[in-house]
Length: 211
Ligand code: URA
Image (tube, rainbow, N blue to C red; front, side, top):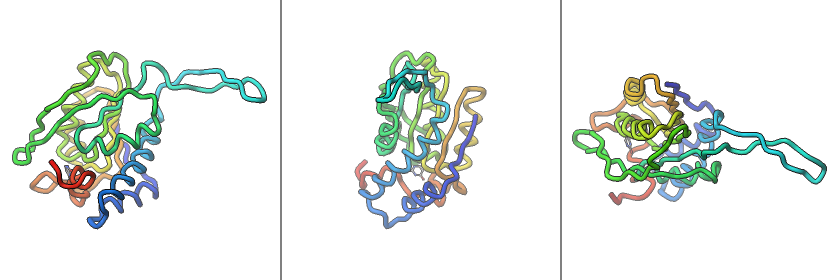
C-alpha cells in the first residue's frame, strides 16, 4: 500500500481553516471542495488515458482522453458526499457509486446500510472519498467491497488521517493495489475515536448537526 501525504502550502492552508472551530458550514463546504480538487490532482497521476487526435485551427494535434472503462468514484455517506463536487469537477465523466457506512459511536464498529456499487468492477480504477481516516474500519470495508467486485486499483482520498487508521488499512489490504492520499496526517485518535487534533465531526461540520 502506498500513502501519500500532500505537501503543498495551499493544501496546508485550507486544512488549517477547516480545522478552525469557528469556520461555519458554508465556508467549510466550499473549502472542502477546493481541497478535494487539489488532492484529486495529486491522486490521479496514474489515471489511465489513451491517445486521441484532435484538429486545432492550425492543424492536427495529438492529445489524451480518459480511458474506458471510466473511473468509479465512491463517496462514503454521509460525510463523503461533501467531497463529491471537488472530485467530479476534475473528473466530470467518471461514474459515481455510493456506500452508506455508519460507525457505532460506542464500539466504533462500522455498519453498512447502503451499497449501490456496480456488480462488476473488473479492471476498474476506483476512487473512494471519505473525509476522515480514523480507525480505518470504514475504509477497510469499502476497499473490500470494490476489490471483491474486481477493481484492480483503489485510491482513497481523505482530508485527514490518523496513524492508527493508516496502519489498520495497510494490515488489511495486503498486496492489493491501494493508495491513500491525505491532506494531513495527524497525531493520534482519542478514546472516542476522533482524530487529534483533526477537525471534529466532518459530517456535522459539513451539514450542520443533522444525523
Ligand atoms: N469521523 C469524523 O468525522 N471525525 C473524526 O475525527 C473521526 C471520525
